[in-house]
Amino acid sequence: HRHHPERHEQLATMAEEATAAMANVALAEDDAGAEDFSAGRVGVAPPLDTGMTLDERYELCRSVGEECIQEAELRNLLDKKPVPVCYDGFEPSGRMHIAQGVMKCLNVNKLTKAGCHFKFWVADWFALMNNKMGGDLKKIQKVGQYMVEVWKAVGMDLSRVEFIWSSEEINKRGHEYWPLVLDIARRNKLARILRCTQIMGRSETDELAASQIFYPVMQCADIFFLGADICQLGVDQRKVNMLAREYCEDIKRKNKPVILSHHMLMGLKQGQEKMSKSDPESAIFMEDSEADVNVKLKKAYCPPGIVEGNPCLEYIKYVVIPWCGKFSVTRTEENGGDKDYLAYEEVEADFLAEALHPGDVKPALARHLNQILQPVRDHFQNNPEAKKLLDTIKKYKVTK
Image (tube, rainbow, N blue to C red):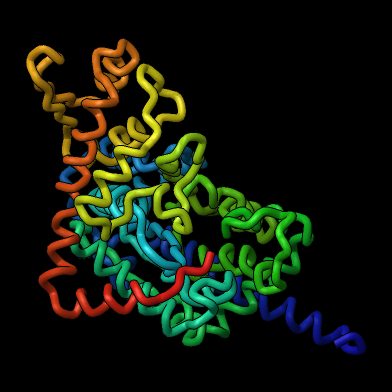
């Protein structure tokens, strides 16, 4: 292309047309009434009579995020747009831990209850670029199907949820996708893109394959490609979400995606900031047996009277109380007797005062987690197709 400056101009024009077309879709949706909107886009759930006030819907959505950029924009979106579109992308890359299984389910159910439509971007192509499953697309897709089965079994309300496979959608609408990817790449310096590589669980200093440089640019494009109003990913993905907001400024697009980032659950061992799929001891997985859960929690870091960096208390705060509505401890009378904690703050206060001991926390936590996981175990035990899927996946070697 070196000798063809007009080729560069042509590319720029294509990209501008694609982004302008997408911006117009977004603007048209903003101006459209509820009826036009529900009829206008394929696959988006119809408006929902939530029976909630705007304040209640806002509070419910806001409770999903540890961070929200920006709160006023989220409120305005819920007020003006009949069916806001939320998105999260996930790489089918092995087993599913409890944060992805249970916390994600809680968050999706909150957002759809508030009237949103949730799009899961099953990033099978991205897993391929990031060299998951030894770069075998068929295996990656099997793992994707397994993850959908887990969410169904644990109780995700799928009536306003759709799963979109990146390989299928990009092939189908490549004429929209690639000009957008190239435009984002063209408007950003390499150093800016490299700063985003932590989104893949890689550091900037890792030996990166060239495909891994495309990854943040494509993930940024996904947001516009899927028509997402809310990016509902982990806090670890904020850099690429910010890239999307900066891109909006570049192309003078008024409506930026709202970033609603959820908390990352820490690993079970001391000092593990987040769970690792390559260290099975660092997390509870959705297909763990009762014995697995008990053993992992027995070994888990839980120093008496210390809340800071205590994974057992994190699990109570982010998984058990939101899911079960309480944390129940069973003890002998001389050890303080049985107690139901309805709010996490009560658990923390007793733990700090050493009125609640790790020896009581761990078995109670194990009991609650096993209760949450039981429907998933039953599904993979009793449903022949689900059982076959899990058996197949267990044979795959998980690559980092």
